[in-house]
Amino acid sequence: MVAFLTNPQNLLSILVGVLAFATLFTLLSSFGGGAKLENRMNAVAVRRDELKRRSRQALAKDSGLRHTDAGFHKDVVEKLNLAKMLEDPKVIEKLAQAGYRGPKPLNRFYFFRFASPFIFFAFVGFYLFIFNDFGLPLMARVTATMAAAVVGFYAPNIYLSNMITKRQQSIMQAFPDALDLLLICVESGMSIEGAIQKVSQEIGGSSIELAEELSLLSAELSYLPERRQAYEGLAKRTNHAGVKAVTTSMVQAEQYGTPLGAALRTMAKENRDLRMSAAEKKAAALPAKLTVPMIVFFLPVLFVVILGPAIINIQDTMAKSH
Image (cartoon, rainbow, N blue to C red; front, top):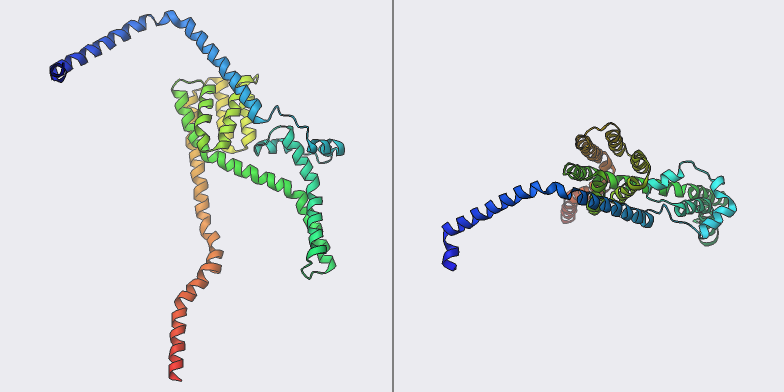
């Protein structure tokens, strides 16, 4: 047996036989493939229903769209009617852009929008008038206390703006890579829902925020009456020009039947160029930002290093001469 298996001619014969069998099996299987079409279609339908069910469960669990709020913040907001007193038509959209969805974050925002001025006012006033006045006159302490109340009024909006900016940066850093993955999935034959779900799972290591948005988009594509609403929702939640251009292209591809792969390839290149231009802009602004730190921190140390030994030698020379 060992001599038979080590003979090159025998190995070549076995290889030819395996290749011939594989070729014959492939040709015969192609003739009988149409008989199982109905079973394959049923399997696809079952898989699609399963994906819809999983997407809806993930949406109800993670997105917060179906969550209710029955806590202390809601009671205060309803009793004081803060939603009407501090009404902001864009607050829900801003909270969604920051990653907060549902009634609970909305009630918390209105609560802290109302309570923050009093909290800042009480803290600064108590500190300046009880613990340490820093030698300030009475009017200066009163002014500082009122300024703290004003800062407290704008603090929730400032915090929300910072969260929106950080979320947009995280999304846009990984968005071109997500488009490349989406293009590969679409060109391989996957549906757009399956491709988006697959990309959301793969892109989580680079950007959790983008993975969350893509998972939500996949779920909305499953249950919204129009796919255009899901794409427009993604554009509103991200509020970025690159994402809006991609969603517009996808809506046009759905409406007019244009090739989605070509549009994704173009959008991926444009978003990559946007990311590169943003990096170049930061690099170009770096010398101007480094001017003040160099003057304050680097130049004094440089003068000490250069002039220190010379001053010491001069002092030694003068001491010896005397």
